[in-house]
Amino acid sequence: MRILLDTNESFRIALSAIRTNKARGTLTTLGIIIGIVAVITTMTAFNGMRNAFSEGFSSIGSDVLYVSRMPWVVMNDFFLYRNRPRLELAEAEKLERNLEGRAIVNPTMDTSRSIQYNAARMDGVRIIGTTEKQAVISSVVPQTGRYLMASDVRLRKPVAVIGVDIRDTLFSGANPINKKIRIGSYSYKVVGVMEKQGGATFGGPNFDRQIYISITSFVKSFGGSRGTDVDIAVKAPSHDAMEDLEYEVIGEMRKIRQLRPSEDDNFTVNKLDTLMGAFNQTMGIMILLGLIVTSIALFVGGIGVMNIMFVSVTERTREIGIRKAIGARNISILLQFLFESAIICLAGGVIGIVLATILTSVINANVMPASISLPILAIAILLSVAVGVLAGFVPAYKGARLNPIDALRYE
Image 1 (tube, rainbow, N blue to C red):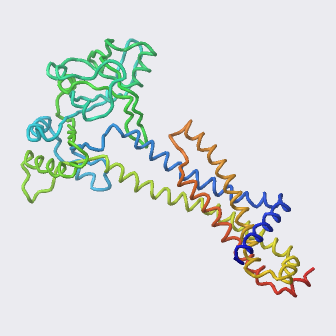
Image 2: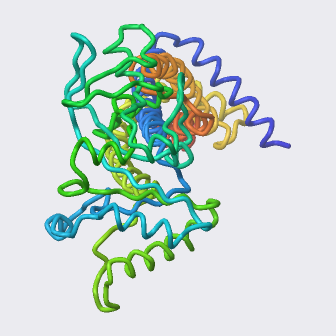
Image 3: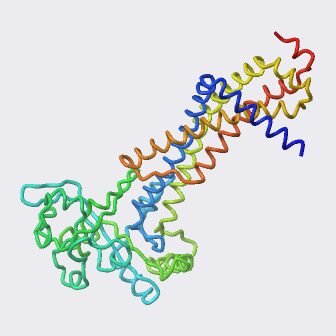
């Protein structure tokens, strides 16, 4: 019961002291404000980059395996991967037959070409040869028109489904459906426009700046699989079946490529987890470095709070003596100054949160999707209070240990 009374009294005295020295308290919070803004901005920027990454690569699918010549993330031994034999379209067809009824298999090939409609032109557009199964592999659907059909693939029809960036650049708001564009030196009729997908995150592909055509017309127009890698997407019946399917795909590909048991795989099975793992590892290092740098701002702010609290204890030495003379305990004096430093830092943290929220809104509107989550707010509040307690402990302890007689004599 006594400790509750001491705590209540110390809290009221701390508030009174802060109200008495508003200007000094305000200046003291500046370092904390800067530190909290830096910490929150760093964490929200990380979340924003992760959201942008996930959004940009969402069309890859978390339940899809991609058989490729090269791994998506090459840490070393690049030349070893480069010298692997290319995947052939015939191998994709064999894999499809071997996995029939157990998974959906879709081969793709891609190249880069210039495209043109009347006088409008775009260079370096990604052209993807695929099948109607791409609509099942990816969750993205056409915004207008239709996607590729089995008859387009079977009859090698020169039809194309374009991304929204291509529609906006070439057609300037006009309806592109049934219009003919030139891809390289070949004419293709636009039959659909894909919904906006985003992309181009951290050097990744821009999914809105690409064109889908049937893989058979791709071979006809751009020359088969010689010199062009074939990527094979294999969609699992469920996410839980991914692990078993991965082993099955590796086994089937080894049989197709006639690899002996002692030979290493000369292909790679990629999946979205590979990208996410590499991204999280890289961003983990970046966020650690960012927090180390921002913690310096909080440390400097904490030093400022400590200095001000030393001044506060010195100025109120006589007051401490009077309180002790009428029965105040050391714990009461200690709590008084700890509350004062914690409240100052908490106020700085709240102001920092408000400023960081405004800054995050600007980032979200102009740079990338970003938002402040409840865990980030909780961390910011706890950091503010922790800095206040740590910074104020030594001055508060010094004040609590003062001899009441010496304190009363202090001028």
